[in-house]
Length: 335
Ligand code: ISE
Image (cartoon, rainbow, N blue to C red; front, side):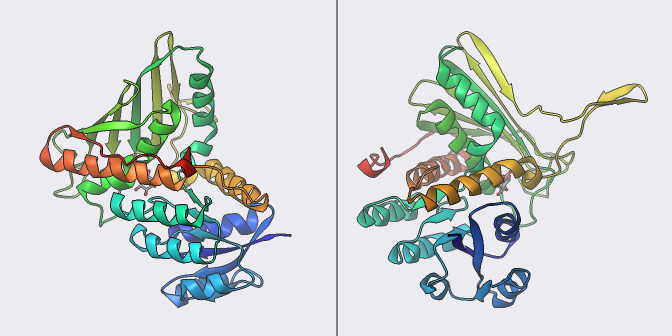
């Protein structure tokens, strides 16, 4: 039988997941759309046969039509929604961040442990991008030897008007925190943040771009250039430098055109387009695992670990120094 999904949050990501589950994913349907703004929920639900709209999360979760939850509300609302989902023992695909800070993420971890089984997959969709998957397979094969350094570039054409200097770290670089831990199979132990004189494209007062350095417990060094007002498009690249070779992703062009004395391809306009296939694969993998009664993919532990690295990152940014990451011990449920 088809999995009945409640999508919580009818904003950009929520509406995109509603479309995806309805049109792309197999084995699932959107049974409910939930938003504090009930009119917004109704508008999104109206396009889907048999889909209910709710203003209240618990009410939606109590519905017999709801088997699982996609959580796409703002991060600040995640903790309460996750704890409610645990009460109903529902599987949740939780958009990043798990929660906005490490203390609340730890509370979620503890609640999931009390439940006794994993229920949460965190929406770090880069792990489902075919280029990152290839890079991880190559690194895991050992063919290039030990990874020494990882260079990352993360560029957005522009940022939302309310974007702050801290958000470059905890909204954007958060993806590199997860992908670094996943690619290398190592924890990040310290963060340093440096910044050049801000770009003239950036709104007044925003420290954009920034240059972030991670150290890891495996002795690797990782840098991230984050530039959220790069204008020309959305670009995410990574290069691993290993003992016996290097591997680089994110240059993929699906067509090269030569004309007028120049050659080139196109740059994707935003993350929805760049990672479209990754999102599709992520949601399909989540639905398939859920129907088998399993939970796979990035866990609440990964969400917590990234929240801890974010905290060190924000301190490193404001205090202008290298800050060590404080990480709790990894509970047995996540080993
Ligand atoms: C946004 O929240 C994302 O998740 C995108 O993947 C990232 O590129 C962007 O910088 C963030 O603001």
